[in-house]
Length: 499
Image (tube, rainbow, N blue to C red; front, top):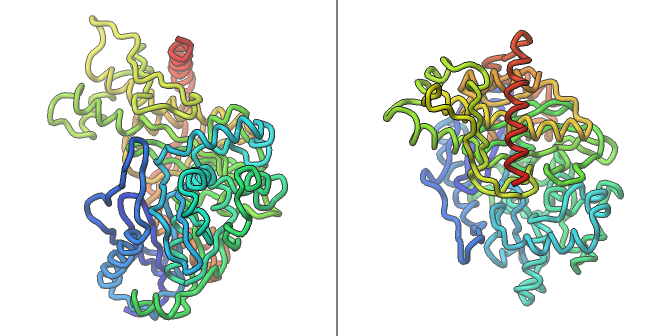
C-alpha cells in the first residue's frame, strides 16, 4: 500500500499506542498498542510512581512494527509524525542525552510539599497571576525534589523533558519542547510570555536545563539516520506535532475554540474547556494550561477539571447494587424507569480520593434521601450516574465563572457517554449540545502532525472527516426538572463539605 500516511504515537502510562492515518482520506488504516497488559509502574515508596523512559521507547518500537505490518505501509510512505503523551512527567538527561534516572510520572505525589511551599512563599497572586496554577505536584516541583534529594544526580542534568519530548528526542536526536508543555510543568509565565524565570530562581534551577521551545504545529525535528534504521522509517521524516494527552484529546475531537469542551468519562472523568482569555480560578479548583493553539499572540487556554470517581462509581454500582450478571446497557435500561432526579435519591460521587474541585477535601461517596418503601436498585443506579454528571457540571460552573461560555461538548462515544441517561442529564443541566465522535489520541496526534507539516492548512481541514456519531440537544421542556435535581445535589454536597 503506497500513498501519504501520518503516524501518531500516544505514550500512556499503561501502554504506547501507534496509529497510521491516510492523509488524503483522513481514515485511520491501522492501530496497535504495546504491551497488551498494563506496563509496570515502579513504586519504591508509598505515593511514588516511576517508569523507565526506555520502556516507552521499546513499546513505541513494538507498536510501530505491528501497525506498519497491519497497514502494509512502508517507512517511505510516512510523511509526518505526531506525539501525544502522559502529562507532567519528569525526564532528566545528561550531555550525552542519556537518561539519568527513571521518570517521575504524573501520579507520583512526592513533590506536593515542594509545590505547596513555593505557593506559600511566592504567594498566591504571583503563582496564580503568572503560572495560572499553584506549582502543586507538577514537573517543576518534581525537579525540586530531585535537587533536594539527589544533588549529585541533579548536577549532571543537561536538559529536562516531558515524556513526549523524550520520544521526540529518541526519534530525532534533538531536544526541544513546546509552550504547552512548559505550561503543564509550571515553567511558562503567562504574563511575561516567556519561561517562568521567577520560579526557576526560587527553586535554584538554571534556565539552561529548559529545552529549546518550538511551536506545537511545526517541523520540530526530523527522524535521524539511527532512528530510521532502528524503526524502519525514512530518515528526514518530520516530527511536526506533540501535546499532552488532555490537550491532545481536545485536538482529537476538534476542540480549538473558546467555549468548546472536550470530555471523557472512563474510570475517572475529565472536562477540558477552551478559554480565549488568560484567567484562573482563585481557589485553584481547576488547572489551566496553554492549549495546543496557544501562541504569544493568541490566548487559547485549556482549563482542566478532573473527577476521580466517574466510571469507577458506575462499575461499583454494577458490581454491588445491580442484579448479578447484568450488562451496562441492561443497567441503563433499568434506570430509565426512574424519573429525572431519581425520586429524591442523591449520590455524592467522590469515593476515589481527594478532588481538586473540592480543594482536595476528602468527603468520600455518600447516598442520601433513600426511602425504604419507595426506592430500589434502579434509583441507586440512576442517582449514581446523575451524581457523576452533576460533579462535571459543578466544575463547569467554575469554568463559567472564569469567563467561559460553554455551548458545545465534544466526546468520544465510549464509556459513560454510551448511556442515554448520562448524556441527556449532562445536556439538560449544562444547556450545551453534546456531539459524540469516533476518534482517539493516537489518531489525533497523527492529524496534528499533518497540520504541523503543512499537509492540512488548519484543524478544520484535518478533522473534516471526523466521524460524528450522535448529537444530543438539551431538552428544554425538561430543563427545570434537571436543574431542580442538580440544585438538590449541590445542597447535599455543600452539607457534606461543611461537616
